[in-house]
Image 1 (cartoon, rainbow, N blue to C red):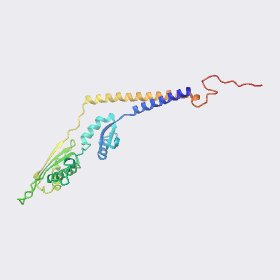
Image 2 (cartoon, rainbow, N blue to C red):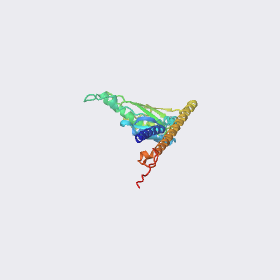
Image 3 (cartoon, rainbow, N blue to C red):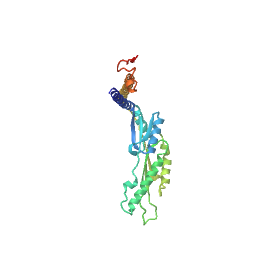
Image 4 (cartoon, rainbow, N blue to C red):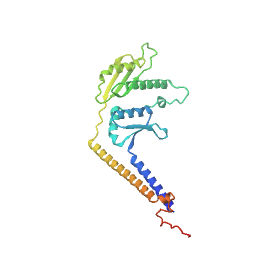
Length: 268
């Protein structure tokens, strides 16, 4: 009976130690989820360059990737990623916008697919420019007039979002050239307009930061208390095993604490 009781008590202590250890070690929180691998790599690289420890791991059920950081770095991580324009938001596929229900597409669907694909490719190219956080391109490509020999007079509108304090207005000519070279029939620079917008730096509220830091401190104290309880549970388990070592390991016939030592019988 004693051995069974000790075994049950040790099992319960082991379960308690495991639970407390898991609770004490949960200091990382999920910053983003449902990212593709390229988005996760960009986010982790930007955070590491900002001095913030971060890691990625596959999401549960294979639903993309997650980015994990220390919860104390949450305000700084949000600010760094906002200034960097990360993660880049994915765009809907043109097939999702114009679903091909029949075997033959209409001329309007084919044209819209072509324009949409060209806009996405041009925007992706402009995002590679230094200092650009995000870019959008909108093309206007009228149909050719069958009664006129003149080519259709298309146009383009470009919106550029830049990082704080990034001065790339001087590259407007390069941006226009990239759009015109990637758009058939667009040869007049005056038909391409480029607008620059600078993203304001992320301004954190000092009171909110102090409140968050106080909450994190309380969380750290709770984690240390849990760790201390785990250590105390380990110590109690060790004492319990030591006091009942004779019962657990079958050595209680001569020196155990269950009763006095047996005397040897003399038959002489």
